[in-house]
Image (cartoon, rainbow, N blue to C red; front, side, top):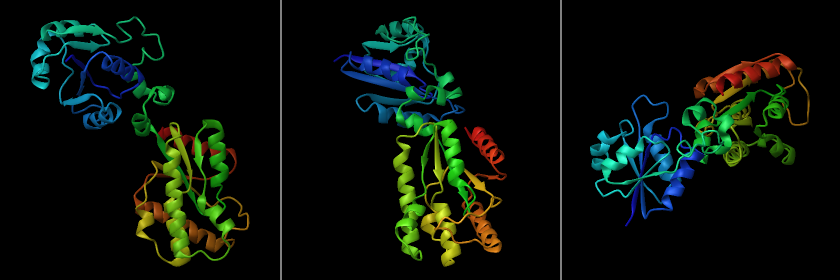
Length: 317
């Protein structure tokens, strides 16, 4: 049986790591990946260990709470973690050659830096650059890493505060996918008063739509309201706030749109009177406070409103 070993931090794992690992896996019967970490790493070692286990089910993944074993002096550390004989030591840097010799293994230099391909978009990837600009390297990140870096921004506000208009504007300039408001389509199809069951379905459907869109989203996912908004509707219409809606998955940031735009009737809106509108706006804001989620108040008209939202999203991303 031929055994191989690869060591690294994989912080985060990216396409160059996976290309090297899969090439190595084809050359041995058993490949062990040693995932190393330090306590102050920007991405926790346990998280990276789980990512590697999910991405490479045909490899043996071993965690090591210490620096990456480097040079001939690290042979004892490797032997303690991998007591079986190692035939091939794979790496993308020449530093592994002395360690391979100390282990009695053959150094197999598969990586881009050894191959002189540091300029290449794939083989030249480095984790520091990925962490500095995940969006710029998005196509080279595997799904678990994309999920780690993806940010969900939810537009939250009372009626006629421009949520959908703002979502369209931000999406047009960012290319972000937008999850639309299920409640609007529900009310347009099913006329009549909203019951508790209706509102719970609206919250569940909105949550399900968000989860389904995540698979296709880039670094930013825009959400035109979520279950917290449905909780506010429950409170103003039924005088209760269902725990199920408050417990739904949360966005990374909420943009709370102030009711400072003209009210526009569209056939599905309820609160045309100023007092009713502002009462609903207070409930909408209180829901965010009680949920303990991060939010930024957005006010103004036209480009002022868009710029405020753009700044809030930019600070998050």
